[in-house]
Image 1: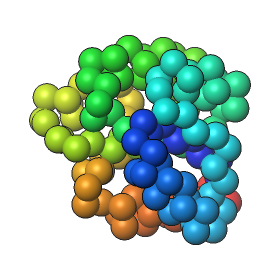
Image 2 (image 1 turned 90 degrees about the vertical axis):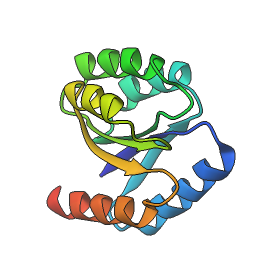
Image 3 (image 1 turned 180 degrees about the vertical axis):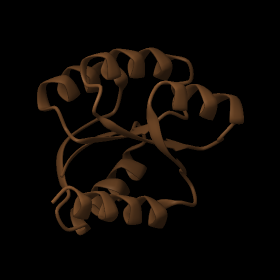
Length: 122
């Protein structure tokens, strides 16, 4: 299962990359530190899943997701958040986000969901 990662914090990105490499049948096809870099790569690589850190980006994430989902409507999006405000969660759900994880506490849950998705993709 091809996965693309968007994370601006190098330490968190490194931790996520390590996590992804440990999950069988998960293939990290690319990563980016900003929406600008991510958009072109995601559209050209067409991964099955995109993991997206939205905490530092705010409203720009809404526009980014609108553009990506318009071009890749079947892309599964997993959002990592530092502050899971209900209004943001609601808007992201409207934009097609399927999974939300608390960035500081949910790495194990993220791994479990990715394992489940990879097994299901067979």
